[in-house]
Image (cartoon, rainbow, N blue to C red):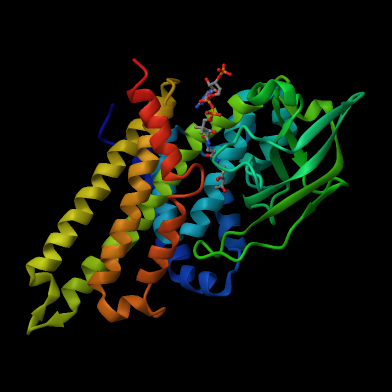
Length: 380
Ligand code: CAA
């Protein structure tokens, strides 16, 4: 594994860093306060090729690798964590599985406009009673001739209020358990599909999520991704990639919190000197810097394995577990360094802490990541 970025990856990092500094960071606090979807920023992500980073050019993507994607996600999320997750869901949870499991005809229709960013995708696995236990799907897809009639509900669907299509998982044969789940791509304007109002969340408030309700929603057979019964494996292997995206998002949030804490510590004085001269602060900054680098190494390892086409479930779970919990620790310390000011909305420290928290929950809670890692540790 290379520890140095290639020239293309470095260029992408510099482009994303400049974009985030110019367009995201100055606006992130306002979008958060107003719970405003960053529509213009998402358009610019599309112009930069950031909505289909690892998708081949042939299908409208930027034709880069997943290490480049992780680097881009970190930089975008450093500027705005909400914009980061909008990008992550479209790339990892929508485009990647259609690229991997779709037919050429499906890619033409359901991948190209999403990889270019003309349209936005989302991923609907979670249900009110199937969160961590993803195999317990209650949404059913009943075959009727050349169509499936889909009934059920999904919740916490990131990008749900703004998406043009959803990669949906539903039970086609309940008797087969997880082997009876199938995947479908469903346009969000189909009759029988309605959306709930956007969720009111603690953090990442500029990215929107909602419930999706399916009431005898008729989906053509040609919209099934993979064979009947392949859905659980499609979902799990997709999450192996998605967890790298979320780990990178966590890394970006941690970096934003850390860099602002360093600047504040050099500026703020107590006991007659900048607080950066107090060992209590120095040790906190040292731990933050070390943890951020450790997380990045885990993220890049998982992304390199994905690029090598090797199963990387354990490495992705480790990266997401460590990076997400690290982001909360770092954001918490950054707030502490800011003292009373850190608790005010006039600074970004409190937003970073709120934004970091979700990375320990979505795309598999920390407890689920520990299950995946321990299953691998104990398998021999
Ligand atoms: N890749 C390919 N296949 C996989 C796999 C993977 N990563 N993980 C499991 N499988 C296969 C297994 O090999 C097994 O195959 P067979 O049928 O051939 O035996 C099958 O799937 C079942 O595996 P398990 O028995 O391990 O499955 P399980 O029911 O015990 O579940 C779990 C495992 C890890 C707990 C899983 O349910 C899980 O990851 N839960 C968390 C769900 C999750 O992350 N949800 C996030 C929703 S998306 C989101 O959050 C988006 C957002 O808003 C940003």
